[in-house]
Length: 113
Image (cartoon, rainbow, N blue to C red; front, side, top):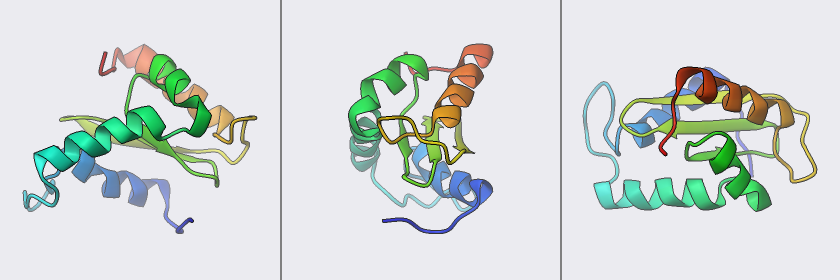
């Protein structure tokens, strides 16, 4: 259920989602706009196990957590961001990673809401 990637590699992989399905360098449409909408909605509503609503409220970005402590999130049309910290909370998400993203979006005013 996991692959080995650095935070930088994972952020680059998620740029296609932040860019509405298009490649950033080659601008190829890898997934349709309809597929992008569906993926972003699933990330927002299901990407954090039983803590998806709390992540949406605290961070305000579609994202996906992993059991290794990684979290990838996107600001559609703008950027992808990845954090990693292996200490998981009781819901199985990175405790420090969630806090870091919450601080980031609060300080930058970044949110889909």
